[in-house]
Image 1 (tube, rainbow, N blue to C red):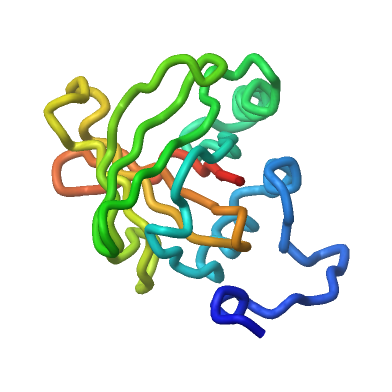
Image 2: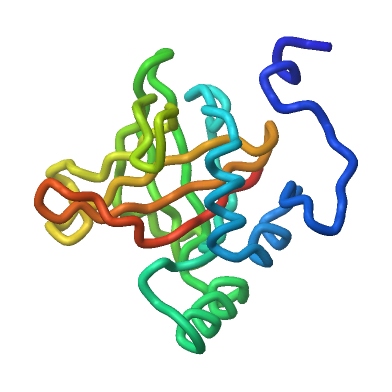
Length: 177
């Protein structure tokens, strides 16, 4: 086994209740408790792991419920959803930069800085995406994303909105190579 594959949990036989999805579409089918559990059990990626352009999918929101939440999830799964993913550029082993891609990858909006840090979801580390920089509009700067690796080519993320000193989980997203 190589060092790259050794860092990931061993392959398991999937069961009907096994929340070990292998694609963006499979993640979209999970509810919030399943996403919470999957996120907590994932591993922290290194900055080099996420280098380049990754396809994205918004999975679920924690602030909308019922029919509105289902409608938003359906829209996020459609080809007309404007967010296409994120692009990452590591700068050494400790920090990096990135940007979101929207509208068929044409526009690059909302730059973020990346680093490894403590998760807001538990006592484990994550890849942090910090949007608090002067290039971003005021309403983007309080966003703090974090990501964990499910496989070498699939990542699960949480997006938080910091209001005052408190961070509020707003949604789950996923990225894939």
